[in-house]
Image 1: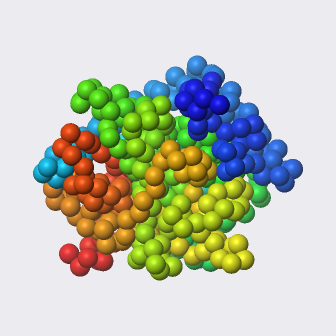
Image 2: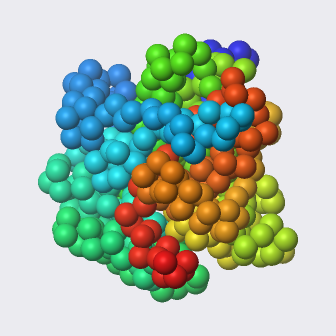
Length: 406
């Protein structure tokens, strides 16, 4: 198969699943007949919307006039090292609601409304997906229910306040580790109580088919814009494109624009937490093993009995033990490289970008900044790193100030 060929929805074949929703050996469907029928309904509706000019026109109008797209590419001259590679930022932090999450939330809520659903339900970790979904539901007059771990609620208080103001029903989750994985479990339990009237809006390229390809499609606008913008700015392509990876949606969004350019290295940065030699990290692609969790096959961090391991990251949006099937497939094919950044490197990068460029990044995005700071001095001045600044740091300010005692 020519992995550079495009499919009918504009996605390159390397990131196009087979008929069952597998990317290579990763991803796949849920076999339970009732759930499978519900997911088939979503898949069919999404396929129709891909080919519907009216749906696409409304989506493009909202991206431009509501979200504020295109988000710009910025040359971070002060952050770029003397004698090393130049660092550029794709400014998804400038989107309405402050992150890339609004890209797929607008799309999924439009889809839910098209399907005649009454309620949209989701999990959230850092709260950014919850804020974006609550925003889209307020705009499009849909009920919204968000499940969030109590650990993350305490850490991400600004986003919790925003969700409440926007009118969503916020459900605290205290079971298990009280973080993202448990919020996913809780949200799914709620979904199965009334699936006929509810749309489950997964917040990343995770979960069973069709969610990985659907979220990937909505997020691919990042890479399409970034490639055009970077080429217009520099006359060429970046040496590397980099993004943080938790579930993996912002990275897949950026990578999608460069899959037909083998000269561009794709780099995902996972949370190394307190160190890869400890159990307090979430470096799934670095140390995970194959298995099935949350209805799809992926690399995930697991215990001896196959249960997902407790994970850690200072970035609530990255503390997930699994990862999207596209990333598993790109890793296996050698088309992307996955590295990691520790908590300390991330805090240092958070402060470095804030004080050199006047841009306060989300802690999730600061993992990618940490990689660029580490990698750029090893490269030559005629090379470049384009990283996805997937979100802004408003939500993290109190946590950073308390932790660093600023």
